[in-house]
Every structure is written in structure tokens, then in C-alpha cells.
Length: 111
Length: 116
Image 1 (cartoon, chains in turn blue, cyan):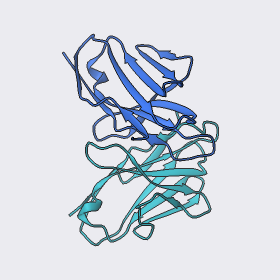
Image 2 (image 1 turned 45 degrees about the vertical axis):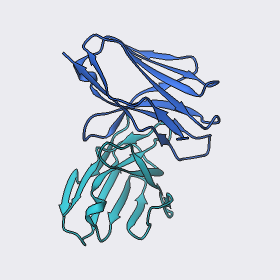
Image 3 (image 1 turned 120 degrees about the vertical axis):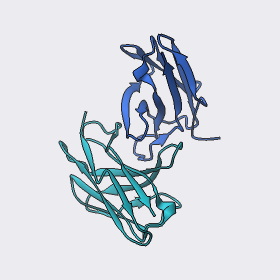
Image 4 (image 1 turned 90 degrees about the vertical axis):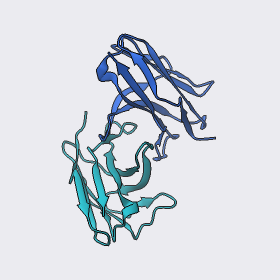
């Protein structure tokens, strides 16, 4: 089992749609979780952190379920500019440095 | 967020030559920087952790004599790909953590290396 697994893509959605990405992680002691966005041929950029209480930033909502070792990202009212690859990122237990990146889920938002 | 720069942004070289890539933290001091490699349609793979003033920690399968890392100051880490070959062609990305945000990594813009 991979340490971090994401939904296989690509997701093709029309503008205005709501889309959800899922991610599971294998190390139950993992400490922190993030969603990054990566545009083609560019570096990953932090989209948002993921907390047990859930967090929302505009059209984006992230959720963490520690019991199921599962995190999610919900994008509402998709825009063309949301087209990118979304990376699920998991940090190991405190003191470890090896951040684990998911393989990414590609999103295409079409007009 | 914190700013990390890389130089060069792209490089084309002949097989057998060495290429140096610089990673700088522009507005913070980074005691630890990370070097990743990303092949097309694949995720980032950690190559090594660069620690200021000490030897880098390499991931399994990464040749330390081929990928030389130097972290001589709190704002600069360099990766040198020695005797580059076409299979080394990839997107190399560095990242750093700020002292205040030990969980968050800020990435440089990446260096696209093409070895002919």
C-alpha cells in the first residue's frame, strides 16, 4: 500500500461544478496534512492546511478524518483557473522530515 | 508566504557535464532545505535533505556522489548533478521550511534540466 494515495484522475468538470478529491494515508501517526496545487511545469504551491475540525477558504473546503486516515478537498463553483494538479501532502510524526506527496489528481475545468 | 528562488530555471547541457542548481531562501533563514525530482506525470520524489553546516541526508537509491549537495549558509543550498546523462533530465525542485512554520514547505520555482 502506498503511503499516500489519491483519487486517480483526471477529473473533467464544467465551470460552476462542485468537485471533491480524496486522499488516504497509511501512517496513523502522521501529524499534519496539506493540499498543494501544481500547475503544469511549475512548482507546487500551498493551497491549504487540513485540520481535524475542517477548514474553509473561499470556495475550497478541506476535511481530515483521522479515524479513517482520510482527507478530502472540496472545490465549489469551479473556475477555469482551478485547472491544475492537486497534491495531497502528509507530514510524518513530529521529528521526522520526510514529507510524503501523493501522486496528484489532475483537474480540468471546461467552459 | 515565504519566498524561495532557484537558479537557473532551465538548463540544457551535454552528456557528461556537471550542472549546478542554486536554491535560496529570500526572506528567511532556512536551516533545512529539501531537494526533489519530478519526472513527467509523476509526483515529487525527495532526493535529499540539506542541512546547513552538515552533510546532506540522501534518500535510498539516490547516489550522493552523483548529486552533490552543499548547504553552506542559512539561505543557500546547491545541488550539483555531476556527469549528467539523459536519464537525469527532470524537473528539480527545492523547498525550505521557515523557522516559524516547521510543517509547511515553500517551494522554489524549479529547474528543468535537459541532458542531450
